[in-house]
Length: 119
Image (cartoon, rainbow, N blue to C red; front, side, top):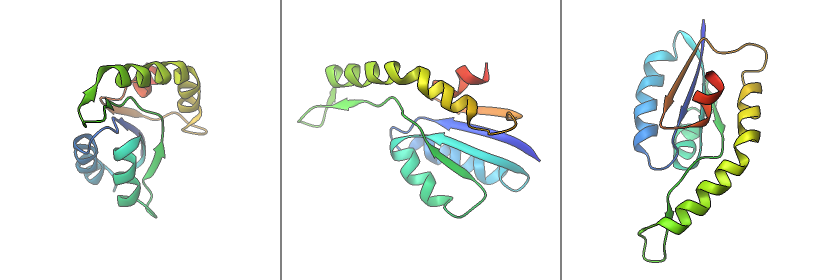
C-alpha cells in the first residue's frame, strides 16, 4: 500500500472539491493524509471523519477581506507575513507528520509548504 500525502489551499472550496475527487479514486489501495486549512479543512474533515483518510489542519495562505467584503491588499499582506513567520515551524511539523516513514508520493494543489518538504 502506497503512502500518499496531499496538500491543498484551504481558501475556497474548489481545491477541496478537486482533491476529494482525487482521494476517492486513490483511497481504496493507498494510505492517504491530507494537509489543508480553512474551508478545505472544514469540508474534507467532515467528509472523511471516521475513515482511514487522515485530514490534518495546517496554517495556510488566505486572502484578507475589507469591511465591504472585497479583497484587501493590506489584510492579505499581513496574513502572508504571519504565514511566512510561522513557515519554519510548519515545515518541521510536516517533516515529522508521516510519523515513521516518508510518503511514496506527494501531491499539492496550490499549497506552498508540503512541496518544500518533499523536495
